Structure formats: structure tokens, C-alpha cells
Length: 610
Image 1 (spheres, helix red, strand yellow):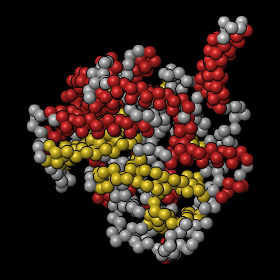
Image 2 (tube, helix red, strand yellow):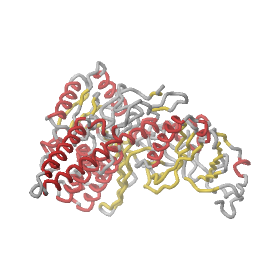
Image 3 (cartoon, one colour):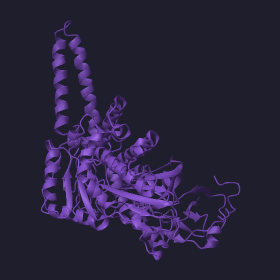
Image 4 (tube, helix red, strand yellow):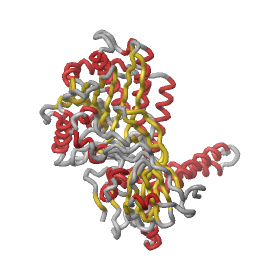
């Protein structure tokens, strides 16, 4: 319903936009034939036709025109982008946000909710198969609406860490945010293309997916602020089991750049770490087992894949130290050995294997000191970035530590936390907040704040990749495993098992669609028309038969003493149950939720299916 004064356009904000900034608040007008999105702190506006999704910039007079009684008016907080499917276009907008803190004095917001505006009236002209395809695509858009861990700023490019941003030329700083951004970390990169073509710079907001945590505390009566900011790379975006390893270009799954910023007495320092899946061609296809087998893909390009990955790291971050936290037994050991063999061929990169589970067995977090002793000198040499209030660079970070386990979640987060705490002591000592002999661990309150920061950071990254909270949070928070922590880890592990086996295939499809790894093409063959049957749809039936068979077997066995026929019934029920269990186990991969658009684990770049 239109508001009582809907035909009077709201007044524009008195505060004008800064050069390069995006509109902070927008008005969405929903007409019968079009959507109009209008800046409330600028003069820009554009219309999107509901019939086909065509975009038309509006002049100030058109933007300020009255709405009328047939128009619904609402407030939105950003345009995430546009995706084109079979029946038309869908516009993704931010419907609610919350303050997440600030980065270098600029407000940072967390996306609370989003929704797609449908411009798909052409759906009535589609064939029955195309309508079914469009319905599935729309279900993927609804999953995309619930994406967690998205952050943005209207005034500051968040994709660049402080050291890189400090070296931008003055001219680039005044360019639109999307032109300043590092495309690796723009979550909605694929969705922005039509807005860029329409030159709607004021509405183009680069979103990053990751984690943003900020805390302030008092140290010796002086305020200190620590910000932990992680940026997830979009070049091999995916879920835990369906995106492993690297693609042929050397981009790895779950690659995350983590920046720890410290602000004290006008000084600001930044310490960078990265994580990413083992940069080989490998996969781990779910099959209903708790721990599916790892499979290394034999490929002639493997050495070049590893070279490309570490060449990219050295170009961006400098000298690289690789910490491999995997075990040396079973499939994990085979993968670790293959990684070590490839690293022997990479000059200028230091590789260290540290069997986390073996050395830190029993939950002893402090045993990581043995790892730190091996790399302490190199980490001090790499240093961190430091600048003063005038923007003058005092120190630069000359290299990076790259950590990995299998998922690059739990063991990796514990290890990065340990290294970050060591760096924090160095940063605060250099700034004059601590003496050279002092550490934040001497203050229980500050130490607890720092640990909580990293626990929440680990949980957020884990939710984005695995769908559950991180494991081993106790090692970060307390330095040891506790009974409540073990229970929490058990619940998270069960949640991962369920999501990985029965939900993540669809979630992977949503990510492939949104990120452009699958592009919908009018007139192409349906990706869902395979002439077979969907095995996963039979899993509930098989599960019901198994449960029913166990129940019937138990009941008939209890009646065997009364009637010999019950023994035969028990044997039949037990045999049927065992047969169904064996069938499900033998065909576990077919009964799991699998990606249907790009396949299980493609190692190639985005493509259009024809």
C-alpha cells in the first residue's frame, strides 16, 4: 500500500555524496510496469522494466515525480546486482542492514536481509521444460538471498587491505568504488555487470564475504582498537565438499585473506595472513560416509597449477611461508605427501609440515609454540604494516604466512590465532603500548577479548564454507578442550555431515549461478533433463523402509516365542532391511545432494552450458 503522502517525493539528504561514494539510502518504488530505485542522498535514479528487466537511467525530473496510488514505496539500502535467467531479469537489493563497526574511520555494514525483485513476465512464453528450469533457478535465488557474512561500505573500498590501499594514487581514490576494488574479493562481481554497462556508478556497491569483528579495550589507561577483517576470494567459490583444491588457473577453494588491524595513539598497523585449500587437483565426493575418501586427480597440468598459485601469492604478498597442518596417515597423508613433493619444485617458497593433530593431541594449544619456533625469525623479517596519522608509511609487511589443513577451517583458525597473538604483541610493543618484555597474555581481560574475537571470526568463516560453527573453538578460547566444547563440536560435526550430504549440492548450484560459473543461456538444453531419475528423491523412501524394517524385525522377534511364523517374518524383515541398507551404501554418492549445474568439482573457469 502507498503511504498517505506517497505522491510527495521525500526530501533529499542535506549531506552530499563524496566523490566515489555510493548512495547510502535508497527509495524503491514498485509500479505495475516497472521498479524505480532512487537515491535519497543524491540525484540519481533508474527504472527497471518488470516485463524484461531493461534498465533506464532517469533524469532528476523523472526521479522526483510523484508516485500515485498504484505504487508501493519502501526503503532499501543498496543494489547488489542483476542476474538474467530464462524469463527475464532479477534485481537483488539490500532490505536491511546493521552497523558492523568502522574501517579507517568509514562505517562498515553487515547485510541482514536481501530480496530479488522479479522482472520475469516472459515466463508465460516459456516451454514447460523451461518453466521447470526457471522454477529451479528461482529456488536457487532464494538460497542466495540468505547468504551470510556479507559486508560493505558506501565510502571505502573494503577489498583492499591497508597496505595496498595506502599505495593508491590520489586519482584512483576518487574513482567509483567498483573501479578501486580487487575483483578477487567482490562477492557480487558477476551481478554488477549490467549496472556497470548502464553507468550507474552511484548504485554499484562491492560486497565482500568474510568476517568483520572489531573490539576496543583500555591498555594502561589508553584506548586500543583491534579489527579482524577477512575477505573470501570468489575465484573458486563453493561449499566444503564440492569445492576442494585448485582449478587449472591456480585459484584455490576457501581462499581467505585475514587482516588484523591495531589502532593506538594515532598509529595504525596491519598484519596479513592467508589460508586456502591445498593447491592440487583433488576432490572429496560425499557418499553418506562420515569421512569420504580423498581423491587426487592425476593431471599433466598439476605442476603448473601449483606454480601459478604461488606465483600469484608472491606477486601480491611477497615472500611466502607455507604451513601444512594435515596429518601423515591415510588419504590425508597421501595428499600431504603429494603437496610436499610439488613444493620441492617451487623455488623461493618455504614449506613446513606440522601434523597438528599429532603434536597438539589432547587439545594442548600451547604446543603450537614448537611450530612458531621454526618460523619466528622469518615472521619477524616479514613484519607488518605501520603508518601514522599523516598517512606516512613507517613499516611494510614483506611476506605472508599461508596456512592450510584439509578444510582450512578449524586447525587453520587455531594456528592463525596463535600467530596473530604473537604479532599483536610485536605491534603493541612497537607502538609503545607494551614494553618489550610484556604481552597481552598478562592481562586476562584483554586476552579473553582477543580470543573471543578469533572464535567468532572462525565461526563466521566456517558457516560460509561448511554451514556449521567451527570446531576446536575451545583451543582458541581456553587453550585446551573442555567437555562443553566437545559437545558443541559433536553437534557441529553432525550438522556438517547432514548439510554436506543432503543440502550442499543445491547450495553449490546457487553459488555457481550467482557467481557466474554457470550462465543461463536462452535456447540452450536444460541442465536438468538427463533422461534418468534423481536418486536423492528416493532416499526418504529408502530411509522409511530401513526404519520400518528395523521396527518390524524388533516387533516380530519379540513374538517368536508365541508363534513360529513370527521367526520367518523376522528373517524376511531383517533381510529386506539389510538389502536396502546395502543398496544405499553401495550407491551412496547417488543418494547425496549433488550439484546439477557445473558438476561435482570442475577445475576449469566459468562456462556457459550449451
